[in-house]
Length: 163
Figure 1: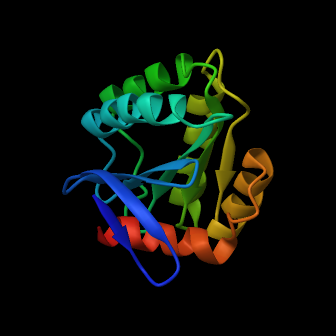
Figure 2: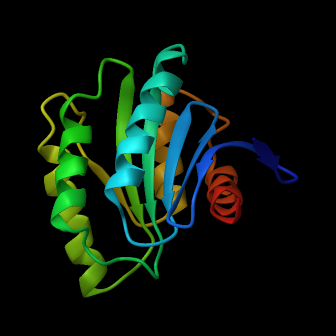
């Protein structure tokens, strides 16, 4: 289902009370609405594979952890994240996590995500960001896509979250 604002059109692939999986351009977003779950990780992995295989030059996967949900994932979810990071295939151009929170808990979650992403055998280097602007700059360079701007990516995240 496509949803749009005045500046972006976002394809919502799956929406639950816990997460939203959406695509825009050559980016897939897993936007958490509640505590990370095994189901969200596994579904987004399956959806990413089919999406990215259809993208010329591959795609980027972005996980968005909102400021109000920065607790670390449970053991089962961490294991699912590790499995997802272990065999992404040749279509993954990059993976990033946007943690919108600040402070000690957010720093701990960032450190945990770095370890999880770094544990994948074929995954590009982990990228942990604090703002949509940082993510947009990175993604635009990785995808060589000038349409990925800080303003548009922030709007994509907003539209997906509200989806």
